Image (cartoon, rainbow, N blue to C red; front, side, top):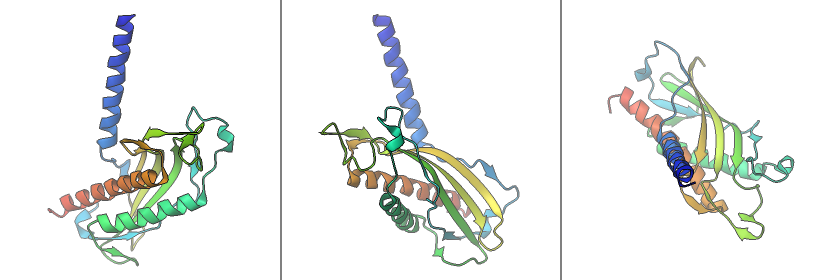
Length: 198
């Protein structure tokens, strides 16, 4: 019995280390056009976060998963957080029209898996709930030459939203989402800085 328990503890520790490492790794491109001179780009046209076809995926433990719905008001708040954070953190000029030297950034959220039912107020059976993060989301990223609309790079990722145990509240969820978008913008800026020798 002790041996089995010991193996379970070791296995759990390995899973936790793996999840932590995954959360800290940068999002790698799934496709990059060969021969692109990235140094010619120094500005971004940031498209609004695409949330038109986002799908709700309840977690496996959800009761009555068919009744889980996304709140459009919450999605609009996520879109506003994305816009503000990316513009503030990108570190390169954001423009509003295609021009030479401009990369078009288009991010689409494909699905979300919140840890609690939306609208639950952060409670389960009348008790306040603490979770590690807000949930998970799947997203795709396309980067194009803004002037020619030529596709230059694609990424797809499943990402945990939040890495700390906190009470499941609207404010904490918004902070988790903001932190995730900051990480994305900072990784994009770091990649551009490497191209430009900064």
